[in-house]
Image (cartoon, rainbow, N blue to C red; front, side, top):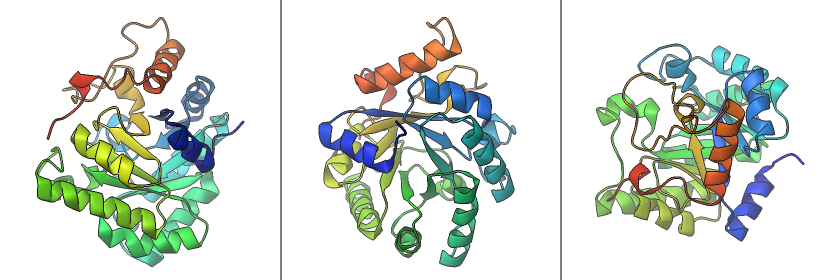
Length: 264
């Protein structure tokens, strides 16, 4: 059966962890979904792992729409989540127009990066039938504002603000919260505080789901590896086995382990 947002809500209620993995084409979408991954993310990370850029900022709506169509062709039952690129949701009107493009291309929900300023946009999208994932913590589209890729929410004031923002965005209609590079104790608090499923990356093992970039999970991304990454291909006999192992490790919460998480 196809995975839906209701499926993820049921996982949360039962305390069952679910897996998320990026894919950008039809072939990998089929491999990933057949290996049991619950959610496929067409991430603007493609700007780095496919295009060779040093950030996600150059990615365009046309490119995201193209890759979403490719993934939709290969998908075999996973929920498809698509990133909205930098500044394509700066106003409510632009968000509605661009989200519609991604939904027509085959996405089942869209992901936006930001904090409480997104409330009106999320509310407008939700009212018009577009499910939303709100991305908090380290938001790569804000890399220039942050001054680099840094863990967020380490001091108590910042932590309390992130909890407040998560609650406000869910109240506005966000169906999922994604936390990136957040101390594990804070991610656990947010997961408990909101009814929506919470996905983590570098956010500890107590979130409802986990996400990795496909290329990171296969150990083929060049350069320095982030702390939260594990190479699942290193001990597997094939790409399919590596993905299946990732799915199992997420479900039994052996991934992420202590060495993949951040402290406050």
